[in-house]
Length: 116
Image (cartoon, rainbow, N blue to C red; front, side, top):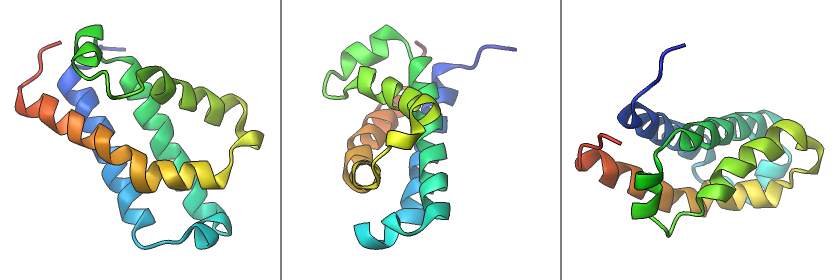
């Protein structure tokens, strides 16, 4: 398997966030909690974000201490290994609010034409 560049990983994160936002547009927490298909889609997007973040350099992460990088990486483990404890309200909040800052950071890095 070939190594992917930081720019490609950043694009993976942005693409996953955009897809999550598209399926979460204007959906209430109550509606999300009863829609298992939407939950699976969002959780898969978060897994991709988590995995892609693990491959970003320490330099990129150091430039953005406002991102809880260990939590971003760790949520993928929760979704893969402790899936029965995933709480819909936490994922809903993450999708609706928390991913915005990460998307902004990734776009800023790409504008700077990241090499790390």
